[in-house]
Amino acid sequence: MKLMEPLTERGALELYYYMQLNRTLENRLIALYRQSVITATVFTSRGQEAISVGSAYALRPEDYVSPLTRNIGTMLVRGVRPRDIFTQYMGKATSPTGGKERIHYFGDLSKGIVASLSVLGDMVPVMAGVALATKIKQKTSVSLAYLGEGAVSRGDFHEGMNLASVLQLPFVLIIENNQYAYSTPARKQAAIPDFALRARAYGIPADIVDGNDILAVYRATLEAFARARSGLGPSIIEARTMRMHGHSDGDTSWYVPREELEKWQRRDPIESFENQLREQAWLDDKTIADIESRIKQELESDLQFALDSPFPEPERALEGVYATDGE
Ligand SMILES: Cc1ncc(C[n+]2csc(CCOP(=O)(O)OP(=O)(O)O)c2C)c(N)n1
Image (cartoon, rainbow, N blue to C red; front, side, top):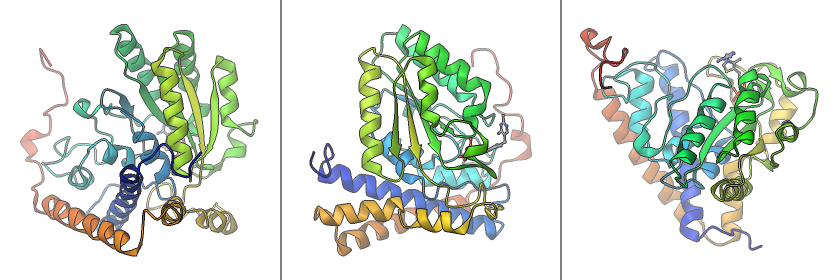
């Protein structure tokens, strides 16, 4: 197989752009949090960008996805604008939820994004249900969910996977094994070394991929989607990676051995892909500088928009909270 197959030069550069956008945007969120411009919390996916971006890039417009804590990259690939993330974290009236819930768990069905629930594991049965709905409607859509390795120990994971496998639903679950569920290491989470082994209990295939290799993630997701689309049912992808930042910004990751972080730092997903792209002669210093300046400009204007936006009026506090007739 050629180095970049099945990506074209344009596609490969888009993946690189989205990973850089993902990281730069999150770095900006951290800075804003430390300046108290964002006052709730900030989650980042540093080190895990290849999983969000690579898998989202394999989606088609008719597909559904529920991005989780570490999946701002997925939202960006699906067309969510950085201004939506900035305004959301700042609780501004112009945010997708009008200033409610100050993290990126908002949906947009026009982009195939199903809003996530904070209760870990719950999106597995929900997204299996979305897959069931598309199957009943005889659509060719697939449904994609993400889950941290910690959440795999929840009962909802079992219920959702069982349902998906019994009904042969077009559902793909990516387990982001980033080694730690907050401070709990993976070995204390499960007695088996590979989370993917759980797929055997549901009679479905599973793939273990290097989550820091965007091409491996992209190819594995394409393959799982092709199975799902041709009626062969669900599958699991375990993407191995490392969370390179605290669980949220207030967490220093004191419980992760420094050598472990250093080892993974040498395998940074963006740098690795950059090296591959240079080898392929699809990227050079000039192209990198152009991409960086494009991202800087996009983020500056979106951030300015968010800073200039008002907070919601108190009278709007109950808007969108309760369903009204016909909603
Ligand atoms: C049912 C439930 N229990 C606990 C929490 C609090 N909580 C939020 S994230 C988290 C750690 C999740 O670890 P993992 O699933 O491995 O995902 P990661 O944060 O590593 O991406 C915990 C305990 C929650 N949201 N839901």
